[in-house]
Structure formats: structure tokens, C-alpha cells
Image (cartoon, rainbow, N blue to C red):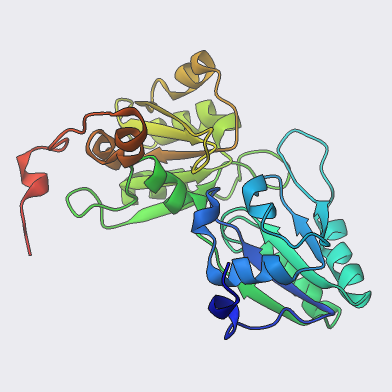
Length: 281
């Protein structure tokens, strides 16, 4: 990359930590601040969801440390990861903590930043494109559409124990959010779908699973709330995945731009009915 592009951007100083979002996968979705950090860092502590193509942008002398946390698999404790950032910074390194998506959207960035404050380590937050928006866009699914929804809810499918968070108000979400975007929800999708249906959502409501979003491995399954668990099992899909519930899923018939570019998919003109494409400006 041209050095002129980065000449006015901040320096990743020795003894400091940048908490950076790498986006949902495609390295083209990195911010300039993220790319700037990659070219300066002495050590990169990265999650499992960071695309290797993003890590390839690091300088040749950089040390890569894996700190991935994947549900159901042995993972480092969050406190240990946070303290490792402190240790590396105190040793005089330029430390990049690189996370898939955005560090402050179900990314534990807040916990790590608080630990850095506790130990007097200077840091910078670099937001990234969260998978619940960017990953769905790569599948041709907008999180909002003015003919469908004026609200969207983002939630996680499991808490620190690996179970569905018990503080989620399913009745309120089912009634108040036309579109629901779920992270880390595939493992419990049967129970989650059951909770939403019991709270009043239609079993026939469209659902999409986007696996390995914004990477060459991306797979998309369109199904319904009532069939979600069975269809995921039949398709053999595996996490990581973003799950979206709502009528916006139907827009994929028109907006699957990636399918049209790569596979010649013919896009529908009007998946929601003629009213959806009227100019209401």
C-alpha cells in the first residue's frame, strides 16, 4: 500500500494496545486505521474469526498469537487474554488486538479495554464492520428496509456459560423487533426458534443462516423459523454463522449481488410486491 495513504494516520506506539475490528472476513472491508495497525504491530493477538488474508497484511517481523474463543471447544480464559495484552505492552511491544467484526459488538472489547485501564496501558479503539451488518450485506440481506422494518435487534445466542442468555425478554423482542439478527445462535437455534414462536412469531417467517460470511467459503441457507433447526442439520452447516429472522430475508432474491456476480444468478425484480419498489421520497 502507498505510504502516502497512511502518512497522516496515528502511530501505534510502543507499549500501547489497539483494539481493532477486522470486519466480517473480506480484507477489503478493513478500515484504514486497521490496515495502518497491521503494518506497524510487533505482536498481533487475534481471534479465530479473523481471516488469514487480513493477517497476511502484517509486517514480516510481526509475531502472531492466537487467542480464539470458539463455543464448545477448549479456549483461553478471557481474563488471561486481557492480561496477556498488558504483559505484551509492558514489554515495549506495539500490540494489535485484532477481532473479527467489531470489538464492541459481542467481541469482549469492553472487557479488554477495562483491563488495560486497570493496568495503566494506553489504548485506541478501532471499530470494524460487524458481521451482523456486513456479513448479511454479502448475502444480499439488508438489516433494514423501509417497507419492512424501522427497528432491528441484535442478540447473542449464548452467554459465557455457553447457554442461551436468561435475561433475554423473548416476548418483548418478538413483539417489538420485525428483524432479529443473532450471533453465535446456531447451537441453540431449535430452542431459540421455539422461544420466538411461543412469543408470537409465525413459524413460517423467513430465516437465513450466513456461514463464513464475506469469505470465499460463504454459504447461505434460507429457511423458516419452524424448520430452522431441521434444515440446518440437514444442510450440515457449521459455525461461525449469522442468523437473521424477518421479512428482509426475502429481499435476497433481488439483492444477492455476490451470487449474480460469481454465479450468474438472475435477480428478481420485486420480492416484496410492487409497493416495495415505489419511490416514496
